[in-house]
Picture (cartoon, rainbow, N blue to C red):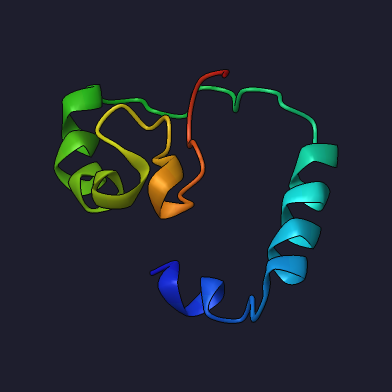
Length: 71
């Protein structure tokens, strides 16, 4: 899903600009929204985990940012 968005970043300068922008965003954890068991979402997250890692902390080699937690 993210590949088409990443494809719009045509050079290193564009990537650096996005990284600089993301670094300005607050790093506040999202409030809990799950009202069921977390295992219900695990079936769906497997698609995200392919790029963002099984633990949601991102995969630097793939330029896939973390989706949870702090560095």
